[in-house]
Image (cartoon, rainbow, N blue to C red):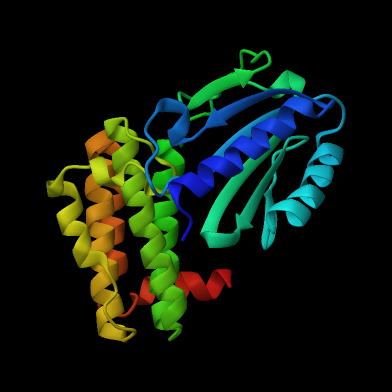
Length: 260
């Protein structure tokens, strides 16, 4: 893998090019390096302010990166006029390079350090919505149960794992930690994370998937309850019904037939 020195040399080349590019009017570091928290494994996160159409500058830089830095692949994250382009360089060095219109060049969170140019005052990114996360929990629980009934073991595992991810996000949101990509998970107390080990699917068998679904649903609604007891009181009995081993009741089955 890349060394810290190799990464730093790449970043220096990027900044040198930005300073001589007539369409680039600003540059900023984001991510861990912006706040002095980078380590040996940190990648490069760079935002460029662009005069004119960001996509034009992004495409020109992309050609240069392939020619001069031997990029192996790239892909984009949708962000309106802003181009967020993610590059894979030799040695598994990741470069997250954002080309932003000048009016959208500015911090939306604490991890930002302007290197040159004028940063604009922008609204911070909104935190995840608790109600939406709780909704995803019950949605995924339902679809995990349906996948099990249909004998779709991999799909069931997908929904169960996604429920666990949202449970971690809910806990990070409640405690004020970073929520994206489980970046705050290591800061959660052991009394929250240790029980989550029971939610891991150990084999693709029906009994194991049912067990993991029950464990995940229980811990998820426990976390919902810490922030919204009233919502948890409504969801808990339904999740307990959903994860029970019994077949659906006749009444439930009749309703399903009538509405199908």
